[in-house]
Length: 468
Image (cartoon, rainbow, N blue to C red):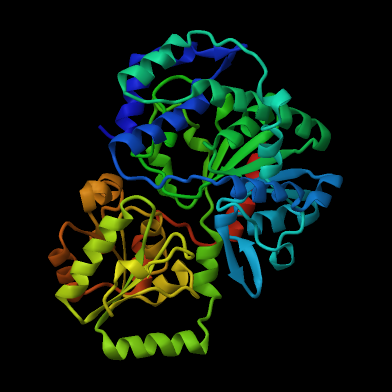
């Protein structure tokens, strides 16, 4: 049973709507912890992040990050993540929200940034000047008087039953306590700044859901910016009970039109007409404005003298060790193929992986810059499977433990754009013998997944939500 089936079973078998604290439904934000915990326990060796005491102390410094930005007034607040930043012309931009911030007016927007790895980029290297750290809110909720308020939970027996029946050990009391704390902080925050709208990437983060819930209770419009794959296998976007919609965004700005068909009539996540495709600023930039340096151009020219085909491999936390083993065997089957492995964590030491000569890591280029130069893109189920064809590069998805087909077989159905490899031999055969279409043809075939002309699409979508 995968995570979506798990969530569906719970939301159809148990009365999750009845679990409340002071008339607040708690399942809409608890469900995220449950499907992640279920995935980690039953489906794959997900990466566990354990922070040392020193790391936590270091993160305390983030409270002061951009602190002076708190002393201004804003019409809009954008919540995003440091992993969305890309280097353009010496400045780190946010690939999801950069043009949005510019269009709304940089002085009118406050960016609240989640330091995913624990730290932010230097302020002097950012394109965004009005910015604070999400750790500002996280730190305040570790303050005992705020976090340890007493509360009673109606029908908590349901959560105990779910934990017992699925052998999970989720501390729902702590999660509820944190949500209540975040809600209190955002209630004060929004009263002070009185934003007109908030924009959020990844709505299902518990802090972001507290922000959405509080905003909607204050008649502030909420918009989610698509940050990754959305399909019928993603439990955050497949809801099987009539949950309180205060926990979900009013609008969803997506990469392409395909998302609309994900939301079934019985899905209570969001109205289909409120799904607005806008494309992606960084994909547009990479296609139309990015130019590789002479050094990079020469490097790939040298690669092509030695190898017949170049494959960009976007890794991910889940199953990375199995992916590396798969690639090493594939590399041994043909020395005519160069695999460029792109880690999720560029600071991780891969020296013990003992890569052969035809598997390399290029730390000075991001995944999009490498995909753009490659003949093929390959991954398990990374969002790059959606992005690579938008750059004109076809996919070969590696189906380790069935993950690639589970996420993409019924979504990326055009075999002129995406193919699947179950074995190392099949991967090598596809690479050496697939006569692919041109980049422009692939981009055209993939247009339903990435709408071109992001700037104009965004402007039109902003008009729509402003006129409602």
